[in-house]
Length: 140
Image 1: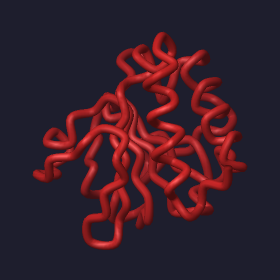
Image 2: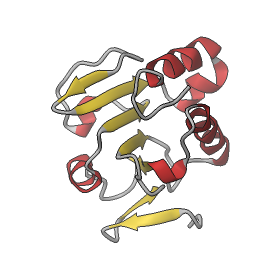
Image 3: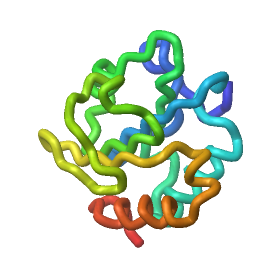
Image 4: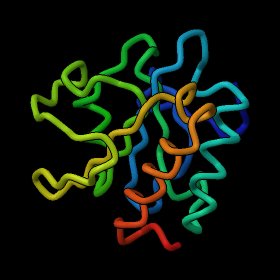
């Protein structure tokens, strides 16, 4: 387990300290949280907004026992950033537009493509960056 990885209720691993009530949801098969190149990309995305892993909580939906409802309840997010995960699979019936911040019940959501798409497409990275700049916690 990565030194920065923590356990949520002894069954869900996560990265970060969630100082800004910012939940990040990823889907990475065969990884506890994120593979190294995706973690580097995420750190760079956060750094561009003067954030770090200390400001967020990163969870992987591929973990055994993953329950978005329980994690949301525990994390109490103000912001949720979803990378390549169908929100219906999280139990969220709302339709989202990619890279358009959407506020639902006091939580601002941003839906992004997965990391593979972001690595290979600067337009998608720009779309994500533009959406993140609309968040109060993301300083650009």
